[in-house]
Amino acid sequence: MTSLLRRRATVVLLLTLLSAVAAVLLAGPAAAAPTAPTAPTEPVVPGIGGADGGVDISIGGGSASTSITLILAITVLSVAPSVLLLATSFTKIIVVLGITRNALGLPTSPPNQVLTGLALFLTLFVMGPVLGDINEVAVQPYMDGAITTSQAYDAGVVPLREFLLGNTREDELKLMIGLSGEEAPANAEEVSMTTLIPAFVLSELKSAFIIGLVIFIPFLVLDMLISASLMSMGMMMVPPTIVSLPFKLLLFVVVDGWSLITTALVGSYGGG
Image (cartoon, rainbow, N blue to C red; front, side, top):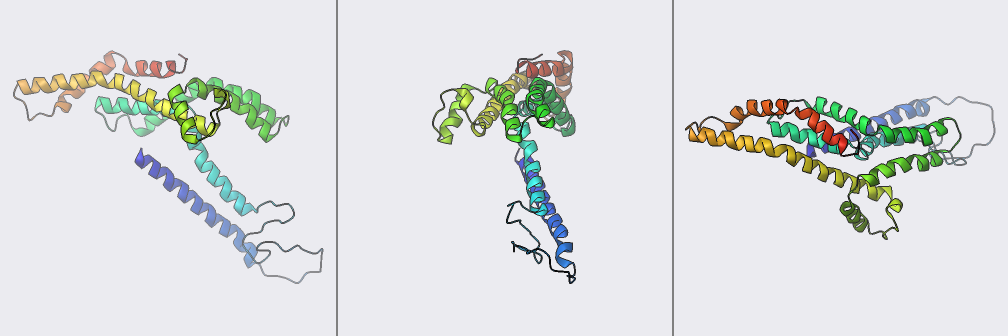
């Protein structure tokens, strides 16, 4: 998890540096262009940077230049995927799949790309009804011009809030409300999203570890039996993990492990 956070931080830093370089390149031609004598026109209100600077901010309208807008847009887009993944079922699914791989004793198989892809598609399957409601009440009216951006956000956050509240444990919700230092709301529907999303993530992690424990115990018992058998036969130099791996794979295939795990994950959200 730490390495994943470091990679995400590196990507965000690189995107920010690239956006800064793009801003300099965009502002460079304007700053380096030769000034040619022109006829006097309407008086120009001096701004920040003006014609000699790389950043030009309109004083009257108060709108930022294209360079600043580009930097802000790239920064938001680099953070948005992480926030969206934390507000869906992706967290629990990817953690359970990772624990399953470790329980089998296969640290690199299935590869991370396969587990991430499977987690993404299962997330789309679980979040399908919620995404459909958001599209119906917020996205389509906004695309038709019937509502504004703020109205679309207020309408679209309602289905997501219902999903988060329905899958957040009461203990984690109370914990985050207490840590926020805010006054306790009258009901759960009044909890802010900045408090609800961390409580939801903590609940998902707890549920994922519970499911992972149930998956891990049979393989742990099998490892202990194999190790005891090897010691009783005097084969102490043979690694028990090598001998137990075929038996664990056989057990996982016989019980149709992937189907059981998928059913448990989808069923934990009231589906399947």
